Length: 196
Image (cartoon, rainbow, N blue to C red):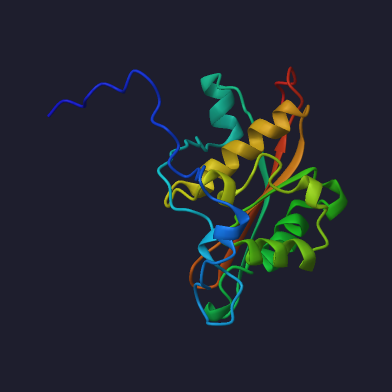
């Protein structure tokens, strides 16, 4: 059957709760344990979303005349016990940076998946990251967590922001529900530099 035409104006963002307040949010119960600190207020929302990443070798991109927006410089994968879900990036990020041949001071921006604020804060503190370099356009708590599209959304956000800032190195990372962590270091050349 035919796909209906898009609406004439965008759908409103249903993640924003205009009638919320600190008072209301502070009364939300903990999500996992009775004495826990993770609530719906400091967790990412599941949202609709989409993003697209086209991945190919440099040789293929050159042969097709496709501009290269970013290159993958290194990746890292790690795992922690499933009950510690969320902290895998704290182990995967150093691996990705080491595999890229760079050092942490060479990373200009980080896109850190924030399933929960506590998990993101843990990773930032554990890695001694400069918070002004992390999720500079907001993370999943602000933007939402489109399951199945979050990784692509984070890559697109990172590549676009590095481009706006004149190029550089960025690290994108994700936690996975069973305790895994994955990270990737990307390089974006300054605009106007087409040779990768």
